[in-house]
Image (tube, rainbow, N blue to C red; front, side, top):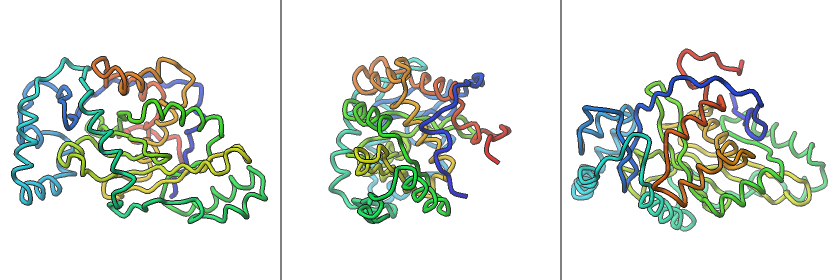
Length: 305
């Protein structure tokens, strides 16, 4: 079943009671260590294998070790050299710079993992023809087209996208938490033009600036002025994400970038501009409070049927 952004661009006002926070599987940025899950965590390769999400990336890690042993050992040494921070804190300065360098190459590097490079709106629908239709008719066409596809899509009100876009210019990256059975897996979202690229932290940690995107959100503002809407769709690497997981990440863009709540957006500003003050546990708290991702929790009853 396809996965439109059922909750995005219109979150319900009722807030869910916060479940017990389970910060398991917190992953380290490529340049600066985030506090681990608790006592007994090892270092280097052994610590990496203890990560609950290691199995999903084992093949890539082993491939790097075989093909570039020097690079592999260098990255493991960086992990050993880093002094761990108190739980709930992470110095993200170097990490943000790494992500900015990665973003600079997104527009020129050939897309990996089957993603479409320079994916245009014209490649999806006849823009000139739909300009004759109303915003509601275009919305129906867009939703009908993607309803049979396993992907994430949305029709975003112009004012919501305008707020998101202005903030993305000032704060192009952020750390998102995806609920998992083991706890939370962190993904970095990095804007490159109107594309938003997501990559897991462990993927960045093991592959550095060559880490491929695992989810890309494509935003099309061509109809924003005339029709008051921005069209969005996505491509994802199905080896790492399913539609509901990609939808949860996409919903969080609205939660953190299009919010009217100053305390929520302040997390994005802190991550980008006051990195030493950033608390990744605050991201989890906001996610739990919003109720997003409940369907990804084992034993939770989903609102979708």
